[in-house]
Structure formats: structure tokens, C-alpha cells
Image (tube, rainbow, N blue to C red; front, side, top):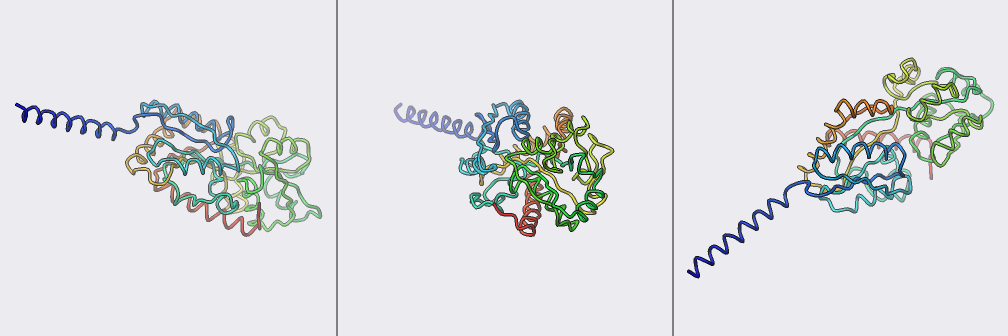
Length: 322
């Protein structure tokens, strides 16, 4: 009888252990943190909150957005990198992720090797947005004016090493312009104010920021940085139509700490891709001037590697330093 009772006890323990192990393999079985490396209200935060809401419905668990700000995204990126690689902490970052490691010594991490690739959400083209007093109505006229100007032409950006500074420097390099003078701001908003006040001549602005200013007739749109024209500004030529091969813009990706199990990363990637490709979310992104992608982890790694090399060359060629 004692042996029978012992066997029953062992059997019950084994079953309980099996059930516990099986339960622990269910993913996700609790809330996921989605760290955003920038402050609330910006484009990154807006995308993250739209994404989190839909991810929660698909995964059956809350997806909680946390804003970890500072150092052009480096603080939030470092926080995510230090989190457990269990798939319960992921990170949404914009294109500065491909720039910081080259430009800023504080970014003491490898933007690819120290992270698990999940998905490229979408790309955001920029509009060359100019004050009417510049006297240029298109990219060809801007190039002509800049090359023959006896004075420097001031352009703004969201800060040293920002995506719109680098996009402008790439433009200057490809066209041979030497007369541009960079005026960095703490974000695009004060730069836009100075652009409207005619204190600077132009800024490369993300479509969502440029669109209302252009449509209200306050500023001129000279060209767009994407490979194809935007449906939001169908009559606006691409820079590539005047400067062959020119393509630039910002983007947003989701990554996680290095070492997230492949099956969990794959589930997250597929979930995000399905959301990005859904009609309602795709339409929402398009209304913000964002071209939805929803990539695989492998495609994201290839894309990110190319972006890092592209902007590293621009930083070196333009001698950009913090």
C-alpha cells in the first residue's frame, strides 16, 4: 500500500511538473513592454501606441508602452538592451539607431549584433520644405541658386546627427553644393518656427510635419526624398528625378535584446507584419505619410546593415561630429 501511495505521489508530482513546464512555454503569458526611446506625442510614440493596441488583441496579453527618453534615443535603447531576452521587452526606435553608433560615443553598443531583429514597420520620406523668400520652387532651382550664391544658405535640422541633417548633407554631397550652412535645433518644432519666420531658408521635414505647412501655402515644397512620389503629394517630384540615385528618409523598427528565442521573435515579427499589412493600420500609416513595410527579421537585418553603412559614409564625408 505504501509503495502504491508512493507511486501515486511520484506520478502526481511528475504530472504537475510537466504541466508547469508546459505552461511556462506558453508565450506570451503576461504583459509585454514596448519601450519607445522618445517622448510622448511624437511620431515614434504615436506609432508605438497604435501598434501596441493591435498587438494586445492579437497576442491576448497587454502591450504596455513605456517612454525612456534621452540622448537621441540612446537611453531607451540601452535600457532595452539590458532587459532579459525573453520576448517580454521590445523596443521601437527610428532611424537614429543607424546613426548613433557612428556619431555618438555614448552609444556603446552594436546596433545589429547586440539586438534581436524583429520587424521594419515603415519608412517616412522627407519633403524639402522652403521659405518662399528663398526664391526656389523646385530642386533644380535650389541647386542652381546654391551653386551660384555668394553667401551661405542656412538650413535647419532637428539636431546634430539627426536624420534630416544627414539627408541634407547627402544631398549636398551628391550635387556638389558647398554653400549650405547647418543650423541645428532641439527638435524640428523650433526649426519650423524659424523657417516660417524667414530666419533659415529650408528644412528637410518628414511628410507629416511638412504636409499642413505646404497645403496651407505657408511654405514651398521643392521635392520629396523617397524613390517614388507620395500619394499625399502626387504632384511633387522626387529628388531622384533631378539627382539620380538620391533616396533618403527616416524609418521605424522594432527590435529586442540579443538572444530572444527564435520562435518568440518570429511570432512577434509575424504579428507586427500582419498588423502593418492590415487595411486599417496601413491606411492609418499612409495618412501619416508613412510607407508601411512589415518585414521579416532577416529583411530588417539586411536593411539596417545597409542604412548603417550609408549614413556612416555621409558622416565621414561631411565631417559631422557631436
